[in-house]
Length: 219
Image (tube, rainbow, N blue to C red):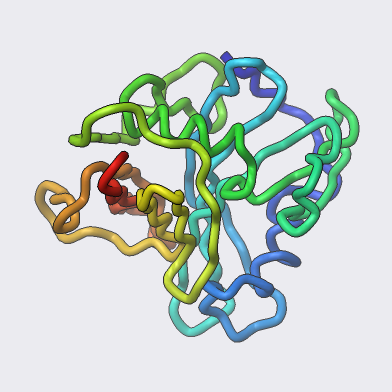
């Protein structure tokens, strides 16, 4: 299990995201500098214990209507070869030293663990406490066979689309929308999904879909 270090970060995660978010095609704000607040999230464990994996949820209050974003981040102790385009920034960790933060949609360790979460082979972990599962994150998979991990990420206005040559598609919702009251129902034709919860600006909790999987013909 990953160990959560309660220490200083310079710059902070929110400061990194404040600079990075406006460069994303799915960013809905008009302000060059978002006003971000942490709204939730969860972690996944790297089996090798080398890469930190966090799915962080932040709310931007810079516009007339607050917008909530899902941002998977990975934290590494050295640069990830070939992933310069996915670098969110670097920060100094009070315990671990220099850390390279990447968009987790382009990090193979993050993608492998996301597939494992959907398959039910791993549990989401609490964002702030070591060795505590996050019971608000649920995942399901109705397809057959193991999920691929060789996804290629493409950002567009609607979020991030992770695809494989075999036709499997995992759509990551970057802009989160609270679901209507009642049980969450999978999207039509979906073979898997991830749901989770986050805090709204008024302090209440919202629940919604974070990712939807559609399996290809050979997946």
